[in-house]
Image (cartoon, rainbow, N blue to C red; front, side, top):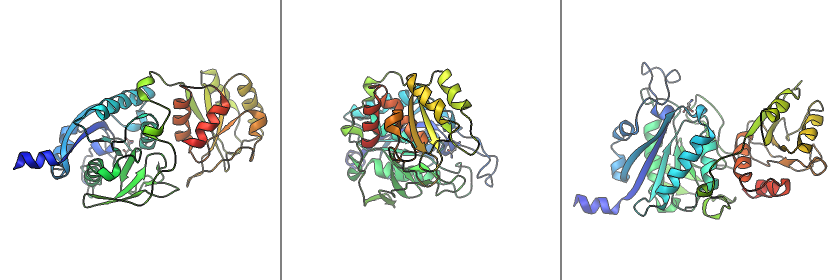
Length: 337
Ligand SMILES: NC(=O)C[C@H](N)C(=O)O
């Protein structure tokens, strides 16, 4: 009977990368003071025995780090392992446990480069497992529930935090400390309640199987960096990033991605020297940057990131620039993804 039950359940692989969901603090009162990336995946799975009711679950430790330290090589390593598993007949869904600081970047990266309609769910937690009211257990349970659900297929890479199902493209860490940290300016796609997924919306942008990018064809990512706009800003950071080899600079601009008059000449000069300039906005609740509004992008040959925040714009620029160095192509890609 047990064997028959196992056959009915979906096969879900959990790829662990570290983060607070694998963190540990000195006492149960330490919800914010702790060390991330301490517990191995076997301990995480053992901590939620109810996972076995949802799916046949196995784990793999891909890395063990706090997500603020994730680099491009880590993204590639994770992305390639996800693709291998997605190709495997006996894998129905993939969950990635991840620190929350750059979770939105990894989720968007996978959303762009994984050629599969199998569910890929990225999940983290705001409190370590040792804290009172730790959120990791339920977030992980929800992630496995969504990963094993047929309804989650073909919806791109998803994020399950705080009972919500979010699009990996849109979601962003919008509050720290609180467990309701992840928000999207376009709203969640659905909810997961008591191990069942309920979807209400679909992502409109190209992703996974409809993407022109494929992790199997990407062996390295170009240097793309971010410089911040603020009152009294100078062009020092932009010039230094280009000097250090940045192929594109994301301008994390004020408001509509506006650029200070103290910075404009340097960005025009950098563009003439081949560096792509991509205007985004660092406003907190979600930016929206349009071409030729605030700055003459056509004349400057700059690109706009539209609604992507600076860190997501960096991900898309890196992926896009594995294929094209043409600013018009880049702009097309920024509209479509
Ligand atoms: N809540 C977290 O996961 C934060 C941690 N710094 C990380 O991103 O790994």
